[in-house]
Amino acid sequence: MSTDLEVIPLKVRLRHSGLVLTALAAFAALPVLAQSAPKTGERVMIPTLQSADKDLGVQAAEAIRNQLGKQTNVRDLVVVPKADINNSLVSSGYPTTEALAPSDAKALATLVRAPQYLEGVVTKVPTGYKIDSRLIISRDMSRGQILPSAQGSKLDDAAGQVAKSIRDARRQLPAEETCHNAVAQGQYQAGVSAARSALAGYPNANIVAACLVDAYAGLKMDDSVIAVAERIHANDPRNTVALRRLAEMYRTKNDTTRELAALASLAAADPTNIKLIQDVVNEYGAMKRAEQAVPLVRDLVQNNPGDPQLLNLAWIVYLAAKDYAGAIDIGNEMVRVDTAAATADYYARLVGAYNAMNQSQKASEAAARGIAKFPNDPNLQLFGAQALFKSGQLLQALEASKRVVAANPKNGQGYFLLATIQDSLDRYDDIVNTLQAAKTNGVDPSSLSQLALKQGSDAYKAGVASKDRADYQRAVKFLQLSDQLQASADAKFLLGASAFSIGQSATTDANDKRSCELAKLARDSFTLAQANLPAGGQKYPNEAAQLLTAIPQFTPAVDNEIKRFCK
Image 1 (cartoon, one colour):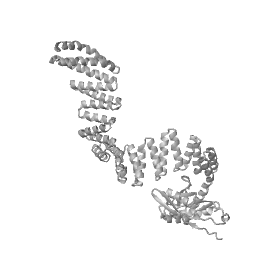
Image 2 (cartoon, rainbow, N blue to C red):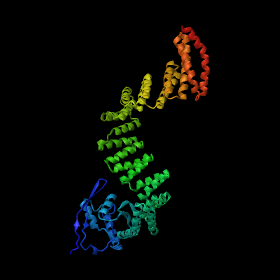
Image 3 (cartoon, rainbow, N blue to C red):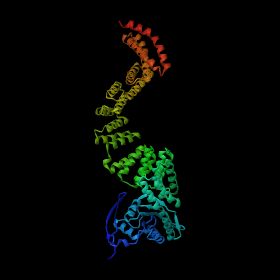
């Protein structure tokens, strides 16, 4: 019976960064006498290396395949032939002379059933050729062994050195697999033992050392995790497994400086890895260091133009970093690419960005666009009113803020904005009504009290400057309201001081105008002052004492005016 192998075409689709890899996988049908087939070792794939010279990348890969084949026995290791690699690439529409992206290389290795594969760069140097490479395990492309840099006057010489390094690096793989399986089953101590046995003969075995880190992490041995991860990082600065663990451990220890350094190194280790960069950006965000994430997302967006998810990530990062100009540019591009991204929240944030840049008119325009699209959104209505106020359109802002509180009577920010606008229009009685309405609708009385206190304080200062009794009377109205909302020594002292000033001026004017009404105003004002100054004296003892001492000096004159003018 013939033992020729039957080739079965099977389409496999794999995706990376929007690219689709479709390949014909050649699977051999088992012959009837399969037990007589010779035993072969694991397969390793050597794809085209990166190079400025396209032909050199192809030649270097083939040279390494040849050298590795010469140095090993097929029973120990099978080098995937160039023809197998090229057939899969051609059937997928991929060129055979270009180096693959990392995820595509992993996918191809899985396709050709190679548990390990090489990634590398070959360059021409004055003395000949230089090859920098690492051996990757297909199960997890983040776990690799950096190989010693190889140089030779001839390409075969450099390739021979790489082949020997591959053989040396593979010695750790049986122990790594044992360690990996033990860790997966929660048998962390067994994982430690397996990993240490491999490291004893190959101290720089980073693939198995990464598993040792995992095992130590499972045992909660943080210092050991850090020690091994730092050793890996020193030998291989691009080892993402070690860097992730370092960032995690330093975060646990609240060592912000070292955590930031680990995150920066992690981003630099694989800047084209979108998922990795997103993870780093999220960590920066959690640390409230969004400004350090801006360069990362800027590069992501530039290298992946038109990607809606990355634009959204950049939009959030720029806003968090308070880079509002950059956020506006990114936001505009985001909604151009994906119109569905123009949500009510987007418009609200856009308005906020313009306001932060003091571009009130553009903020107002953005709010108007948002309200036109989402007329019932309470946040947009509020931001629209704020934008109108900041742009100086007071009457329009007044009406807009009234609509905000009418739509949601419990909107505290709406009441505060309405009161602020009323203050700008000198509508003081309206402010009192607004604050009382806010209290009735459950807005935090302490915040309302502070707003009323500010109004009262401003009015008192205006009275001191103008000597106008009307300013003091306005102060009394707001300070009484503030004290009713939440009692405070500040409100009571200013209330007493304002009432004293009213009594003082009313006493003088009552005598000049022979006015019973003014005489009674003076009497009532001094009574109000006497009722509030003692409590205000808790914070302003000297000032309150002076006023309380002065009041009795006015009492005889006030009593005499009432007797004379109030008949």
